[in-house]
Length: 287
Length: 316
Image 1: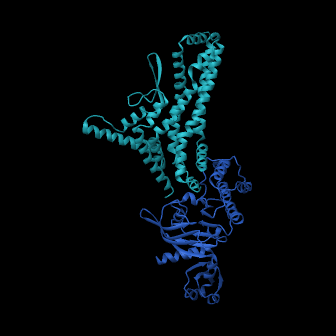
Image 2: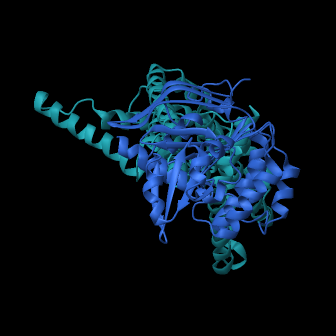
Image 3: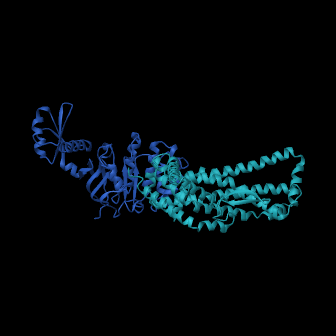
């Protein structure tokens, strides 16, 4: 099967700063991939390369095209919402719809109007009159009305209040996503997206620290909660990470023997956030 | 092609104030001025006696001179304000064309649409070269028609024949078409400047006006100084070049009184490189000259630079 995104040795440097170091990446169709990393880890640089917004070194193919050379053609099949509020502030909603319709061959005005009818946005309003949350709703309505193969969301809910954030992902899942489409999301709010992701990619210092599916996460990783008197025994089984929570010691293991762990205390699947913290601190320890 | 038209429509929507409201305001002011002077005349001129005398006087002027007066006043007087403001509008439009969406970050949205950077650049250039002059011209012609109607009404009221006195003598349609031709020729003649403005617009991190004016100014001053040190004369330099370029432009710009005739001229008749009388062939002369060829070469370099910068505008 051909990959939606295929990268070999993808690198990006800004002057002396190496933002992305030699990344290999394969993202098949029908996945929702969370690209997660601390600030300055290279998430946005990688996305920009994928979207044809920046030059890069190495090989990169998105839907079979070279993004650096074929951005306009690529954008027929790719949509992105970069950050909140990048819609031009002067434009009116109906102008934006008309313009998108004329520029995008696979835009459906009916769908867009349908999504907008579920919001308080009026057609003759200017973008600058809308609240931040409404601008994102508008952008999402536009993007969901385009029959694209890849949707890239770069911190789409940054600065939004919790109501908008919840409905943003619900709408995306219910009305947009299917097995033909691929979504790549970067976000700081890991908890918000972890239940919708199919794949996880952690980026740190421009390198991929973890790249696996959510099923594999459940198989590989487990978290053990023990009382203080069992801590030594648990520590002996090579955990990735240890933290203390209200007198309990919590250990995170990769590919551990679950039977032996279960004897020591309570076992469960770690949250993405905990896995992220563990992976990041482990990498720092190695570096 | 459809995409290009959609992008041009975007430019119109974004710059409606400059492209539509501005010429309408000028046209409105023009008409207001006409009506105010008419009201003044009616107020002070008892039963328009003086006006009648003046119009009678005009009807006694031989047709050739009369047509010269009306034609040239109509052509020049009516278009000058539009020409001037169109120049300012295009100047500031181009300075902002590749800057504004970088500043407010909406460039990320525009780049998410399947339109190439070349199409975007072309849409902006064509808006400056064709769309802006056409809109200004439309308003100019309507303004002329309305003031013409007022004048004709006045002439009829004074008991003269407006057709023979004004209209048949002044060939307004020819005049209007020449104004349009001069604006469109100027759009080509000015391409090196347009290219420079787009380049600055794509480059400037802030205040594009400063970046547009300071480098040429510094360059020209340096040139002047070096030339002066070397030869103790002030020879060809950027200032001189720009001055001559402006003087030779195909814009209907100046008027003077020669042999009892009002003469209007293309550009400023300070040198004899081109014929400055207002004809289509004189405009074309400029467009197929060696000067123009060199100008197109410079414009191509500037525009290629603007395109290169636009492609990389989202890098950092």
